[in-house]
Amino acid sequence: MRVLITGAAGFLGSHLADRFLRDGHQVVGLDNFVTGSPDNIAHLTGNPSYEFVRHNISNFTYVAGPLAGVLHFASPASPIDYLEHPIPTLKVGALGTHNALGIAKAKGARFFLASTSEVYGDPLVHPQPESYWGNVNPIGPRGVYDEAKRFAEAMTMAYHRFHGLDTRIVRIFNTYGPRMRPNDGRVVSNFIVQALRGEPITLYGDGSQTRSFTYVDDEVEGIYQLFLRGDAMPMNIGNPVEFTVRELADIVLASTGSKSEIVRRPLPEDDPKVRQPDITRARAVLGWEPQVPLRDGVARTIEHFRGVIAAGH
Image 1 (cartoon, rainbow, N blue to C red):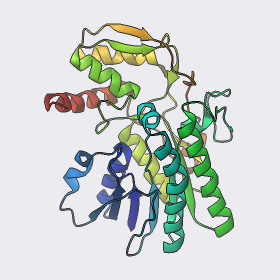
Image 2: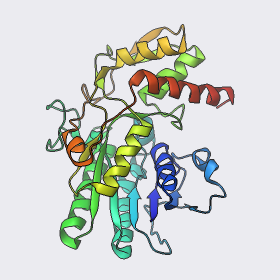
Image 3: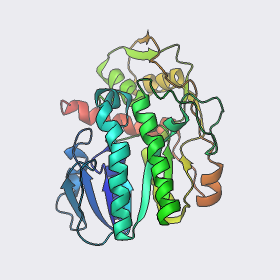
């Protein structure tokens, strides 16, 4: 297969490219480096099965040659990023999704949308099944991301129903691992970098809010299997094992041996209090569930960040 991945220099996009290449497929990567990094794809330089296009998918996009799949992963995806780039976040969810769907339709390709657990907002149902419609504040600071992804899902389903396009929608839950940016504001990278630098670990609220952390290898495998064998309805790909943010901080401190103290900060506006996927559908349709325990994944991620910090980033 030859596939197009937008957001290919991002954390997930770059790992996904590796997964397709590992099975002998060809990948066209597209990114404009707003939040992606050339470092994430440097190892693919010279790979004859990989070609890279520097471009913004929110603008008109032409890709030469046949494509079997279009996987739309372009978007700022951490609170720091989409609060800093609110309008590009909305644009890539709306215009970018429209452009990517247009490419898939023109090429007769399968379209794959990277959506998010943020479509559930601050959920009133726990854990969250795909049938839950969510509790989202459309005008809050996080609304630029939440509503962009909700719109992208609606647009994807419209193309599926009206044009008969073969589509997939994944709802991604908190994912962590190598190639995260040290300053991306996500809780795992925040805690690890603070611990390694001996800085205070910033805990928002009392740390009782919960998250479900999926190691990147597990997440990418679920995404890959969904692309190959899934159906058109949204599917949660995440880890159903729930941890409080305080528990994560304790694991990071123990794993790094850091003496960092924990300091509390006010909880950000509209920050979800709970987050846990119901993965019944992923188990039934794909036979997928995560394999890497949090402590093991955190240990691997710590080793990555030791190298990043040693290199002066």
